Image 1 (cartoon, rainbow, N blue to C red):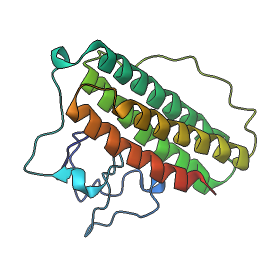
Image 2: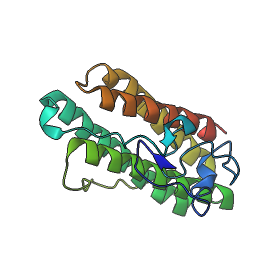
Image 3: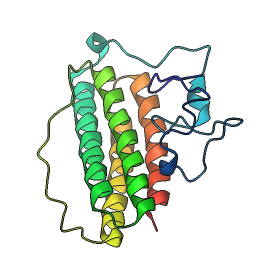
Length: 183
C-alpha cells in the first residue's frame, strides 16, 4: 500500500516503523496508520495517486501557510530529537525518537506540496531546562496542541482542496500525539 499523504510504501518490512509513536500499534495483518507519517488507514491505497498540487496553482497565502507548517513540523521534530536524548525513561526515549521521525515526515510533506527546495534550518533552543520526563511530556503536549490549532486555524485559509485534506489528516495525527503525550 502507498500512503496518499507522504507517498511512502507500507510493506511487511515497514509496518512497525515508528511504533512507539502510536497508541494503537500496526500489525502485519492489520495496518491502522501509516508508519511513516501516522495518518489513518483511510489514506493508504494502491489505486490512487499521492496527494500533490502544482505550486503555480497555489496562491501566496497558501504557500506562506505551507512554509509555516513546514517550519512548525521541523521545530517540533527537532524538539523530539533532543527530548529523546534528554529523557530518563527508555520508553520515552523511544517514543520521542519516533515522534521526531513522524514530525520530520510531516515537514517533508509540506516541502513537497509547497514546492520548496529544502527543509529550513531553524535556531535550536536549549531544551535542558526540561530536565525531567514530566517536563518533557508537558512541552510535547503543548506543541501537539499548538499543531492541531495551527492546522484547524489554517485549513479554511488555504486555496487548495488537496492541502485542506492533508491538513485534516495531519491534524488527526497530532490529536493522537496529544493523547500519547498526556501521561
